[in-house]
Length: 297
Ligand SMILES: Nc1ncnc2c1ncn2[C@@H]1O[C@H](COP(=O)(O)OP(=O)(O)OP(=O)(O)O)[C@@H](O)[C@H]1O
Ligand SMILES: [Mg+2]
Image (cartoon, rainbow, N blue to C red; front, side):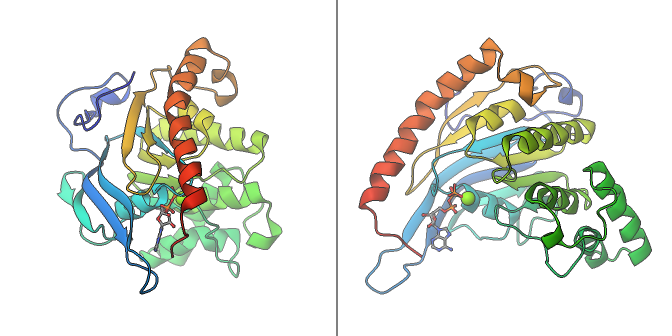
């Protein structure tokens, strides 16, 4: 259902993880309030560019929120702010109720771009973060191998990224993020480069893993089907500049879900139609503006 914008999101208690929403209790995993991001002008005769303006967006403890919006609107910028990699020009971020200063140590970030180190094996890529956190090499290796097995890559530990397929590299990146056991997952179009079959397999795997320990997930995607299939809530962002949420929908489709089956249900189709009505307008606005805008940065 369409909820009023800027309504303060309800958070879930541990008890609420298997049931519906509750109105009180645990602090949100992430709470972004009044976030504005203005990038400096790239040259003297250009203007600064405000990608994101006055955004309020929240992620409940154990909640899975998908963020959709036109290309270039500011989705990655918002994740960068949530990760503490980019300081907002204005606004505040709280993580489990504590104001964020610097890097968000509770968050694991799966970047939009390929982020594996080419000179390390799959095992090396996954264990690196642990070793940087002071875990001894033998234990880091053991934990890396266990995660590679969980994402279906047992036997591929010694392979370098160039020896892996696109889908395998995404699995390594997923293991690399999850091995650190973050309470919050920031995922920026993690499966967009994959073929549809591999993507659906990965989506189902992600849902299985998420169901096991209910991390809080911000999941950015261009794909509305993916957003509805995975999330508890879908937030639609406006066309830029100055993007902000224009609508949000609760996805009240029961779990466990199978992404290959869910898309045939009448309820899914109805939600898809209602969200697409709004998203399409923003995509068209973005397209029209793109034709008249000078690129920045
Ligand atoms: N460091 C930067 N300097 C200047 N402009 C930037 C910078 N980072 C992002 N932008 C601009 O901010 C806007 C939002 O970028 P962002 O990458 O957040 O969009 P997005 O919604 O993630 O796009 P896509 O869906 O294509 O990944 C774009 O117009 C981009 O050019
Ligand atoms: Mg992006």
